[in-house]
Image (cartoon, rainbow, N blue to C red; front, top):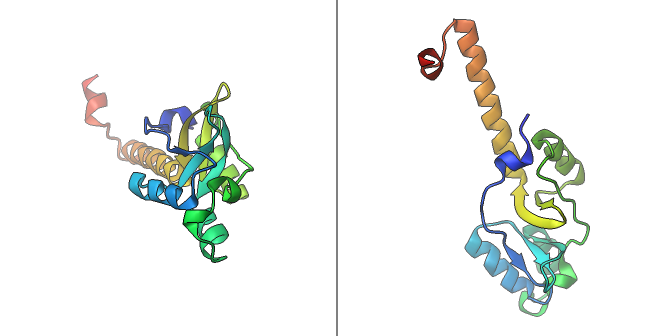
Length: 150
């Protein structure tokens, strides 16, 4: 069972300040190709998350002007975070229960990365593929070439 630290990549953390507009956040998310940004204070402390869903349900659908609405007014404040030593499956399960798709990874009180539910699903699929291949080889009585050489 994999740990979060094993799948966390070195992608730069995408952040915005609460004073920035929701339009600026949306532009940043589009340019970075991410579905959420971490909202941080001037000193980098996490305050909340602003997601595509927040933009849609709290800005666009109510008919607000994204260029005039601050991220701080529309962000999700209740943050669920993961630590690097949490198991991928347990984290994915918790995300499903909470209906969230993005979460910060925190170590020693500092955000070290961001994961999406897609990242966790991909890790699970890779692990399943490795298990399937090992079982297939066991049943067939074959070993992968790299093991035969050892």
